[in-house]
Amino acid sequence: LTELQVEDVKLQALPSSLSACTNLTSLTVMNCCISIFPSVIVKLRHLIALNLVGNLIRIVPSSIRALQSLETINLSSNVISTVPHAMTALQSLQEIIFSDNKLKLCDVKFEKMQSLRYLDLSHNNMKRIPKFVWGCKELNILHLNNNSIEGLPLELGELQELRYLNLEANNIFFLPP
Image (tube, rainbow, N blue to C red; front, side, top):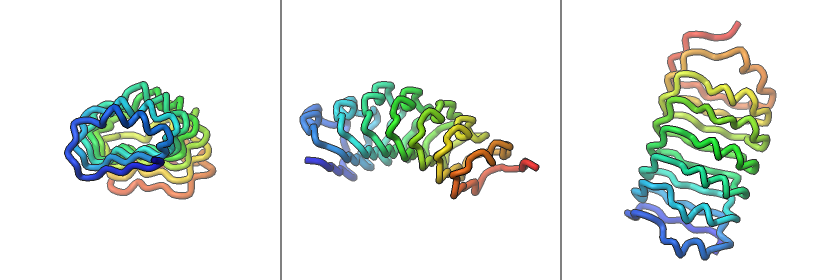
């Protein structure tokens, strides 16, 4: 088994026997009412894509750093209020999606992640663009729409690879000269 997709099933947890699926590269658990990040996931060392969309997850554990092969993580539509610093250990990550959560501030040092190309922090409660963004030199796509962002910093011009920036539905009243 290399791919597993579970959708619209009420689960309290994932079974521990999932750890026996050592060849699993893609896991999707969508709209399943899971409230605690399943600990069995960090045992899936070959996981490349992780989608835990539309659940009730509040906290991403620091043990996530064990997923060194992970390239894509989608935790949108949960109730996450902070992003763990342990995610910076995931040097293979190319795509991070934390849209539609409860983030007010994201001070994780993602600039260490040189592979990061796509970042979606839309539909949260952030008032400013996180400073780490300016260090993500390979970032191509950045979604910050539907937040409470008030201004754009001068550093925006430092993102030479940025091709798409979505700032729709914010409170922007300051633009750099």
